Amino acid sequence: MINVDNLKVKYDDYTAIKNINLNLNKNKTCSIIGPSGCGKSTLLYSLAGILKPFEGTIKINNAYVKSNRKKTGLILQNYGLFPWKTVWENVILGLKLRKVNKKELEIKATSILKKLNIIKLRDKYPSQLSGGQSQRVAIARTLTTEPDLLLMDEPFSSLDALTREDIQKFLLKIYNENNLTICLVTHNIEEAVFLGQTIYIMSKKGTIKKVINNPHFGDSSLRQRKDFHSMCNHLRMILKEGDTND
Amino acid sequence: MIKNKSLYSSIIVIIFWYLLYLVIDIKVIPSPIDTIIEFFKLLKGKLIIHLSYSIFRIFLALIISLILGISLGIFLGLNKKYDEFISPIIYLLYPIPKISFLPVLMIIFGLGNLSKIILITLIILFQILVTTKDSIKELKKEHFYSINSMGANNIQIYKHLIFPAILPKLLTALRISIATSIAVLFFAENFATTYGIGYFIMDSWIRVNYIQMFSGILAISILGLFIYKSIDLIERKYCRWITLENNNEYFT
Image 1 (tube, helix red, strand yellow):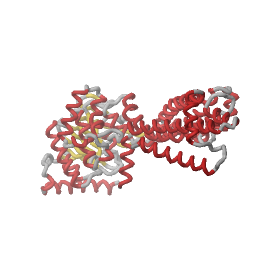
Image 2 (cartoon, chains in turn yellow, purple):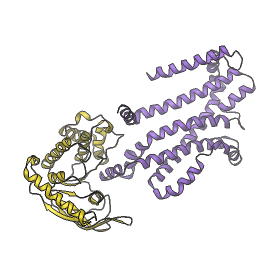
Image 3 (cartoon, rainbow over the protein chains, first blue to last red):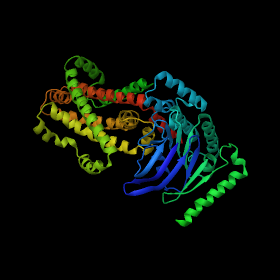
Image 4 (cartoon, chains in turn purple, blue):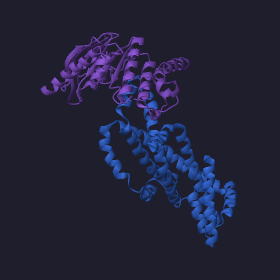
């Protein structure tokens, strides 16, 4: 599905990421973790086609990514909801931009709002929502366009611990139901382990330091298991190693 | 409810006016009742002509400033490099009382409508330009990323992101600048014209016809009220989210 080969991205003179190689198969998930400023969001925006590579290539389904791809859904840190649109208007925006006819739009959006249990919020504005509700709306907005690839940039960072776990479980459910491929950027170790089948660890220099496979992925009650905590500790060790080297 | 508020404020103003009329028992403050009667009489005749001239000047200036101010404001808001060069020029010109250019404008653009319209345009334009630019700059890059990732074209980006984002501040800018522009128009209409509400008021003064003079003042006040109410209406219809956000801030 995703093949990133020797990617380098620059902001003017500043190199944000370099020597990035990343491969992700269809219907798999990966999490990208690293310290603040390591360029993990840059990597994600490059996958979304928003930032252009300076060197190297990004292919999704064997096609080069040059601009945004129709079937890629992007969920941002601050959810990227428009404050001047109601929940309903926000959710249908993706369909509206694609000029989907009114009837179809109505049916699709309603069914997704129901599925995500936020149909009651349809006439509220983002400023009236809690963090968890906003997050659901952002997910709903992305799902309406029926993506096969979901890119997420620290989507749960502003939620309280319990809401975060709820939404993560919920995401796992959506992943299973919709045959999604998910790529998640995070600085939270538990999140990386819970949602990443493959975990990419980035260094402060903007390179990938290590890739680990996570055999425990997919169990929604993983948090209660010992394996989960030993995996988290393992990841923590690798992240710390980087700090001393830098 | 809102209609009641307007009515209530009008009644208070009229009561104060009436008290002043009773206390300062000189001709320069006419009775509000006489004035209102005179106002409606005049409205059928020459007052409506004078008022139309003023409305025409203000609205034309408004349209020109909106077109120029919004497009230039968006351009500078989106293009940092040009903004760095052009903003200092704007800030240099912004605080100058534009009315001081009236003599210059009258010499260059003649004594007629053009110089007056340009003068008002200069006043409104800067307000709109600066607020548009600032509201674009306040937009988060996430908003652009999120609409880009949905595959929006340029027209859609303007429709769903840029225009809704600038509208609330634009309306505030209009509220501020329209009051100034009416005041300035009043002044400008005292020169080289025989039409306009400013001329009408000063002319009535010279003729010592205070009831007529106050009818003119009443007309300006109603004109202002009408413009403000229209802005409020647009705000309630298209910027509901702003009132909600303000309310939330108030409660937390």
